[in-house]
Amino acid sequence: LAQLDQMLRASAGASSGRGGSGAGLKNMSPEQQLRIQTMLMQAQNQMAQMNALSRQRYETRMADLSGMAASAGIDWTPSS
Image 1 (cartoon, rainbow, N blue to C red):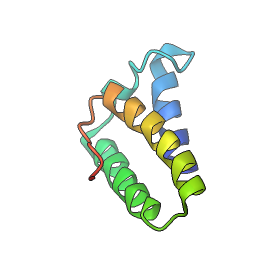
Image 2 (cartoon, rainbow, N blue to C red; image 1 turned 60 degrees about the vertical axis):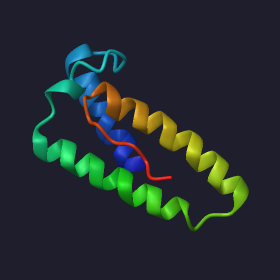
Image 3 (cartoon, helix red, strand yellow; image 1 turned 90 degrees about the vertical axis):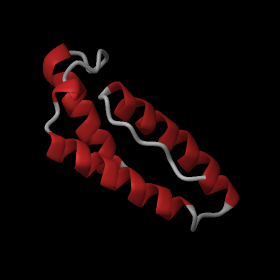
């Protein structure tokens, strides 16, 4: 998750200078978007192996990262 978060924040900050607008995320290459989707799916699989407290913290973090991915135009919905 740390690597995914770093990648999304760096892309978001690339054009905004502050990391808040997400404008840089929309300019990501298809390869970068695919890599992020792959990382999100791997994180979802890892979540299935966690205890309740860890799962709650992880779900919160995944929601944040999914929101950042959505602002980048990456259409990804975690499996239920």
